[in-house]
Amino acid sequence: MKRGQIKKSKGKLGVLIVGICGAVSTTFIAGTMIIRKGLGVPVGSITQLATIQLSKDKKKWVSKINEVIPLADLNDIIFGGWDIVEDNVYSAACNAEVLTIEDLNKVKNELQSIKPMKAVFEQNFVKRLNGTWIKDFSNKWEAKESIRRDIQNFKTKNDLDRVVCIWCGSTEVFSKKSDTYQKLHLFQMAMKESTSEISPSMIYAYASLEENVPYINGAPNLTVDIPAMIDFSLKTKTPICGKDFKTGQTMVKTILAPMLKIRMLGLHGWFSTNILGNNDGFVLDDPGSFKTKEESKLSVIESIFNPKFYPDLYKNVYHKVRINYYPPRKDNKESWDAIDIFGWLGYSMQLKVNFLCRDSILAAPICLDLVLLIDLAKRVGFSGVQSWLSFYFKSPMCNNDTVEHDLFIQYLKLKNTLRKIIKCGLVAL
Ligand SMILES: NC(=O)c1ccc[n+]([C@@H]2O[C@H](COP(=O)([O-])OP(=O)(O)OC[C@H]3O[C@@H](n4cnc5c(N)ncnc54)[C@H](O)[C@@H]3O)[C@@H](O)[C@H]2O)c1
Image 1 (cartoon, rainbow, N blue to C red):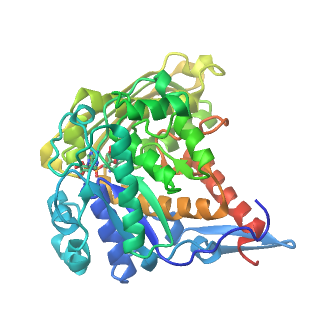
Image 2: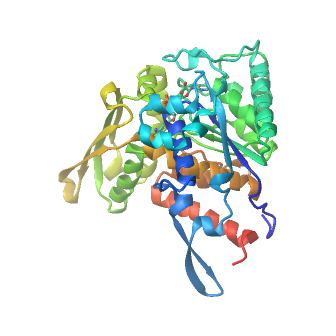
Image 3: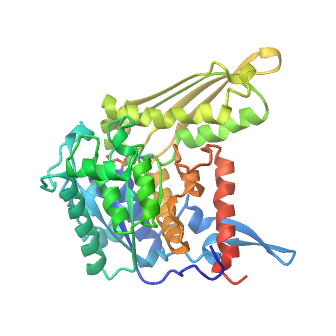
């Protein structure tokens, strides 16, 4: 990256959302519209509220991030996307029951005007759903071409300068590592032969990259976290990031676990369970989809505690994660963590956490930050895996560097990357 190379944000930014009628998507879209009308505060958004400390010529000062980094303006965002149901975003948001009707009515007309494009969907990948608004295609390559045309039409119709794509669709069933994923040419061949390894999310992601559209993966599906796709993102000079938004229980875990580790306190076990009653909870009630989520949630403990180096403290940690579908709670997830720790001479202690959160309320600001930051990454000229965005993910993708789960180290990495961008001439300090 050289000084003065970075393109400023001008014109409109298209945000294409896969799963646009879901709880997270509709909360993100409606919230952004309410906020840009000045009728709400973007609580939880780093790009809108957080500050950054800067220095030049031995002087230090603090500025708001969005005052020193030219991110896209919220007023320049145009939303679009795909879903398997033919609903408009207002009625989908009402069904999701996250935001009140009173809040949704503040932007009713804008929400009603957004209707999903037909989806690429295969029930094998999300067993609990049955789509009615789905593309017909004879093979997966053709499906990918159809998504590409959707992106092109969306861009032309709305006179957009740039587009980013974010997966807020349902969690797909667990995919095992496959040879097909190792090489780009094998992956392309598999798309033409419509093999079962190619999931719908991979089709959206490939089409986006081919259109030079950055891709964010908010679910734990493999999707872009495979060598073929990483290779393609580098070839197309397009940034990618994922996986699985870090919102409630895992956010807390990635704060508490480093606390125990830096005080060299031991851990016998960590039992995490939660209940949620939204559509995501219904999908995750299927064992295949749950397995994908479970893998994503389990990776955290092993990586933070690193038992190889601290066998006395973390050798036999029992880590269990459960998700229970419980309709009465809707989007208001309740999680419990029972943490069995030990201290001086091995004396045991317990720590309990009970978090009554709102799933989509925590996810929406993450979506906003990610679309603005990945758009910035594209303008800066970054491509491939954006590990500096690990802060936002449960199961962060990384290049050759090791995966970092500690929320505060991730935050430092995020801010240091922003500082580097500033240093490289984006802003005259
Ligand atoms: N809310 C959170 O805190 C949180 C945190 C981490 C990850 N996630 C993930 O984000 C995703 C969205 O969560 P949600 O609560 O909005 O779920 P949701 O079920 O309300 O929404 C998912 C939407 O995706 C649509 N969909 C499924 N397959 C599709 C396809 N192939 N093409 C287009 N649309 C498709 C569904 O019809 C639905 O409208 C899930 O994968 C979830 O696991 C959510």
